[in-house]
Length: 284
Image (cartoon, rainbow, N blue to C red; front, side, top):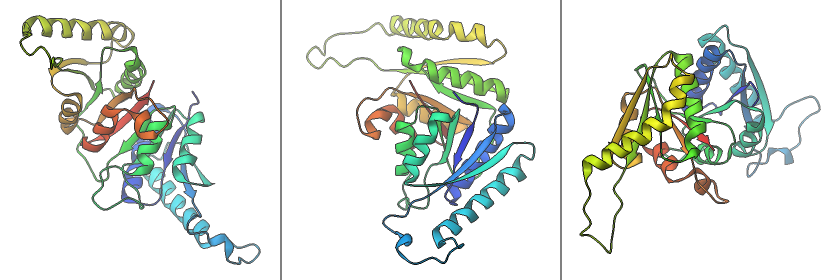
């Protein structure tokens, strides 16, 4: 993994929030920040119109203005951060997905200028979160209070280990509390509704599974204040509830398939739509 944070911007309010978030993370981690915008000429292909030699077309000029404003935002917010900019050609989702190969993380707004009014999460954000092979942080627009706590979703598979690694590193850099949330549900026996469960026994088993999953991480990060939170609830509902008083919500992605929405997984999609804070999706 390369030591580089990438922030995508299109000049929207959400993108500006993403640039600020990325600048803060660059200052915390000491990683350089690269701000990227993409010029997508189709269906508005301006290149078919004549442009005088030595001049840039309107789309390129606009993109450079967006980059200049974003760079100024990042430098004002974190003067000590190392900031650079890149103007790329192509669909924003594909540009950011390709750049993920050289990134420690990608930070984007929840919905850009092309999003539908009222949409919680945009198509670019969903695509990048579903395809990128580095952590993807999706930031909500607007100012949010700082709670000094982040949450990571935990399950009983090894696929959540990359999300735990990212979560403990974030908690260490932020010097904040990490809440490890394990949400579980009783299996539904459609053809055997008379089966009963010893709820105390089930809860004990779930807490034991959580403790086993976190034991090695406790040893590796003894300085991180850790809360083990086990709930009998749907994972999306539990994680969305925890995000109401958190600075960052981190989830793994266990999806399968060729479409971004399938690669992302149902929990990842649900959390992106319902979370109240920034969400980091970490693919296994």
